[in-house]
Length: 141
Length: 140
Image: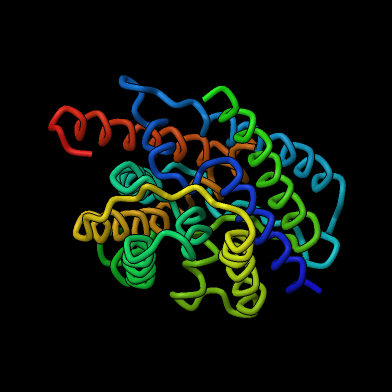
């Protein structure tokens, strides 16, 4: 059942990304082009997505357990550390250069051609290498 | 152009509902980088199958839809070295920073997590700087 729910959520996420225009890299780069031809669509997408989640967190706060899973996730870390800031800077730069973040890169894999595949494979290799690499670069915090 | 923001809100609500169901029913954060990253680095453990199912849905529904309706193109660059560099930055950055647009931007900000709000401001800021710099230099 959890697997079916995951499949459904992944599918709804993918459909939402396509409908909202977030698989169009020009639209994403247009949002980041704050001082050029600014495209505010991404702001509406993020706003639209946050609304149901505000309710979801309210419901989660009144429950002990999720319907099929265990306890609700609690944040592992609460401090702003170097990993968070350096990681987010790198992510933002890659996001700006390509117009892709992980969700839309996966969602568009069937129609983004060789470019999309090259991006996703590079991203997965880097994800695989992150843990050993980051433990060396950043002392355990 | 006028309808873009409406599709944005509709698609955004769908993304938020997906994240809400994933949280309330499966008890998990719907973050694309966390789901994909934990599968490739082996930290997914017992949740491996449901995460694979999530990615199959994420890739499969747009693929199925493209058989019936015309899906707008991604307009992604064909500059492969640029895509490799960008892919590495996104992969390494999201894992190091523990989240991307879905995890920090949607799931984290909606619970008023300070880390997520900081992360979202930082990656949007970095993205803006890259685009501004690239436009100045005449690339992109």
